[in-house]
Amino acid sequence: METADLTHHISRRFNEDLEKVRNQVLQMGGFVEQQLHKAITALVEGDSRLGESVATDDYKVNGMEVSIDEECSRILAIRAPAAGDLRVIVAIIKTITDLERIGDEGEKIGYIASRLATMERPADKYREVKHLGRQVAQMVHDALDAFARMDSLAALKTAREDKMVDEEYESIHRQCITFMMEDPRTIRRALEIMWIVRALERIGDHAKNICEYVIYMVHGKDIRHTSLEDVAKQIDAAHAASSRS
Image 1 (cartoon, rainbow, N blue to C red):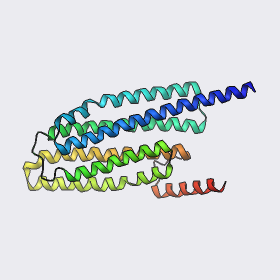
Image 2 (cartoon, one colour):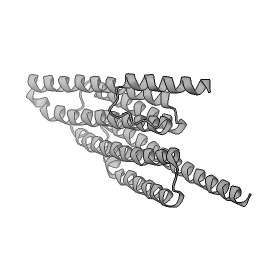
Image 3 (cartoon, rainbow, N blue to C red):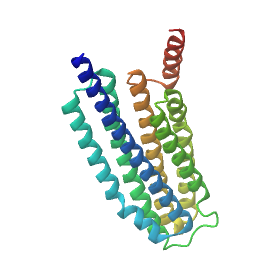
Image 4 (cartoon, rainbow, N blue to C red):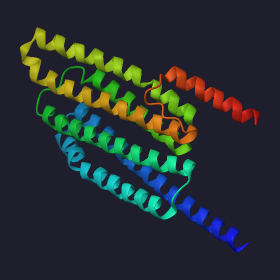
């Protein structure tokens, strides 16, 4: 009986540790979302100071990553988690790496937005870039929501949206090249915009990665080199099997 009580106590403490670190990941994700929103706002509104604040606050994201990584190492050392729980810890470590990289891309956008604020804004006020920024920000939000709810179907849906982000990126990229060819005076601004949309495209990739980690946590499948159509079939099969049992 004492052994059973001890096992229950250890299990409860481990679950508390796991819940604490999951909440830290979501707090980090929330801060990264704010940074991305501010960076896009700085670009669209020509707010140099806001862009600089995004860039200079990136150290906070780095600090969160280090803190969560250390907590995960402590849990691994003290709790020695079994297979399912070990997957969660591994997925968390991978997720915070991608969140940190999203923060790095946000820092780049902030710096470039602060430089572009010194130039005359185009008539469309970067409409296409703003639209891509919203798409990518929604991907990040949905990926984190899937992580919070351990929802593999939502993760798969969000991962599929990366294709639209890639297409939008290619479209803006071609548009910038056309502008530069037609009017050499636009070259500097067009190059800066190309760097921004490249950063946004990479953020979409990192959001997709987080979705893949959610699927790994839930189903124990590494899907990094698997087509999303095949992943969908595997998830449907897993749900069908669980509903029958």
